[in-house]
Image 1 (spheres, rainbow, N blue to C red):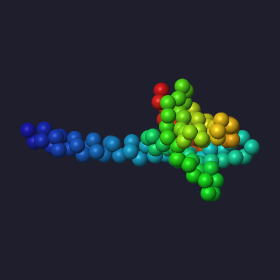
Image 2: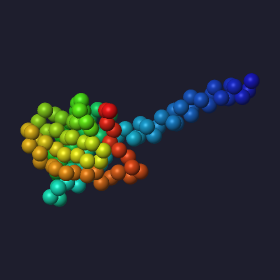
Image 3: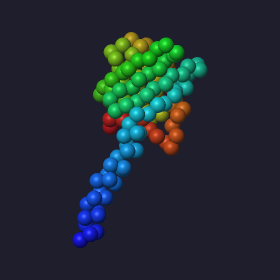
Length: 114
């Protein structure tokens, strides 16, 4: 009987501890190296991507449905990602092209909707 009571007490603690890494993983920062030496950083949370495009330019984009990969936009600037690759369009013109995530330790992948 004591074993059952102990297990009932221990179970919530184990569940709480097991959920911690998932919460920490939900917010990830990646640095992208693009064609022609351009770089940018993206910090991903469950529904947004915050882009740091330069010293003084930071944008917050919302995740929107995408046919393939993941897409974030503010209706002017759009970040497209698939796996570790990305590109950015501003008003339908590609401004960061052929970008590859550099901070992909432990083979982390940017989450997708599919």
